Length: 246
Image 1: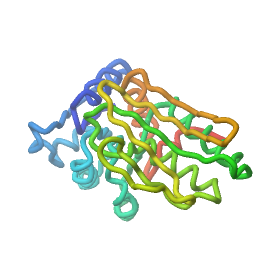
Image 2 (image 1 turned 90 degrees about the vertical axis):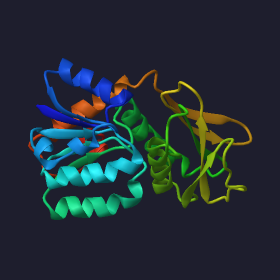
Image 3 (image 1 turned 180 degrees about the vertical axis):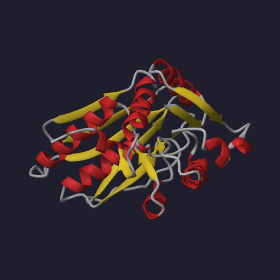
């Protein structure tokens, strides 16, 4: 499989390592210094693109892949406000895209457990719920896409929560959180790849579901696995489509 890497920072370099170990070839590497090389001709040399760039670059990268009729795996977050528009464009042009807030296999298991937990806790209103995420200080968006997925899955299962709000600790605060709001508390600390916690607390006890990433390798390997899965497929997919959760 010939891969175009859109975004060649720390994540892109780890993705490259896993891709080569699994017998693939990287034929294009785009970063901030060679954006002019992101052309239809260059993209056409690849079988699939993997985007781990930046929120302000993701949309233009996606549409460049659409123009080249190149399937694209998008691990960048921060652009989901345009998700429906991208989906419509993808399907109307018969293109192929797979996106996800987190490509780690462990995190996707965590998503499933959290959703099942929220469904169970819907019957126990004595428990208040919130999501906490901790990432390195270089992370540009807040909250993390992973935390947003956790929150949206909880809201889907829990009648007493209608929307989420975000507080970036030390930078911004939403003030008083309403009873029907789910708080996502974001922390930015040096050298933290990603820690996510779903906390249920009552007057008598607390229950925590927690995932801690030790490094970026799980995200990178998952992105390569997703690109492999996407071969010979057409349409608009989420990383959850790869897993056969019941």
